[in-house]
Length: 234
Figure 1 (cartoon, rainbow, N blue to C red):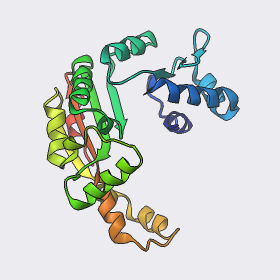
Figure 2: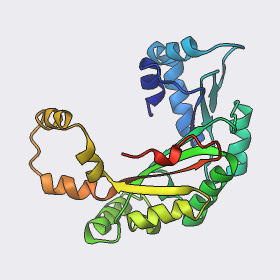
Figure 3: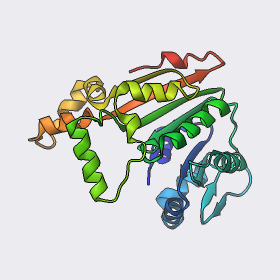
Figure 4: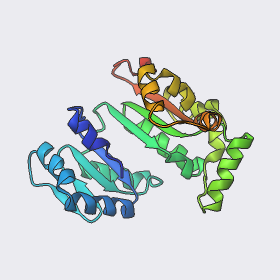
């Protein structure tokens, strides 16, 4: 139920086209919400141009925004659906995965990353998910999720920042980097950090820091046009 498209539109930062991919069941729920709530549907219509907007139970396609119901473990089906909705692989492309790859087996996530690296000549991939999962805190996280029938099929690749980087490099990406979320937190504007921390007293700061050290952002690029993607950093 991500709202990034609407936030980007509000800030006049929409890309040429924004694609969102999820399981068909999730997509159907989101499309129902969009159709039934004018504050969601109106911005899509405002940004749309050309022929009439396409919408059915498992997909939505406008000139600037598409939602596609697909299984990321099947890259051939994914590519077919994306191209059907106007994907131009020759445009510089940003791919964002938020706690997605960890639910796939290592081979499945490798196939997806390799497909993306071979499909887009100029692209950056950003992956947010768990890291340092081999220590005691990480094991407790895994056990808590397993008790809720939530299996992290790819958790072995989340053992360290190095394993996260190596996964990207091994599947066709260049100049991969990774930092944990505690590092990200330290890079935020300190005035904003103080303002946010003042909103509610944080009495478990050590637990917060441990949790942040067990999530990371990693990114890598392919840049045949020499746009300088490898220079993007925190």
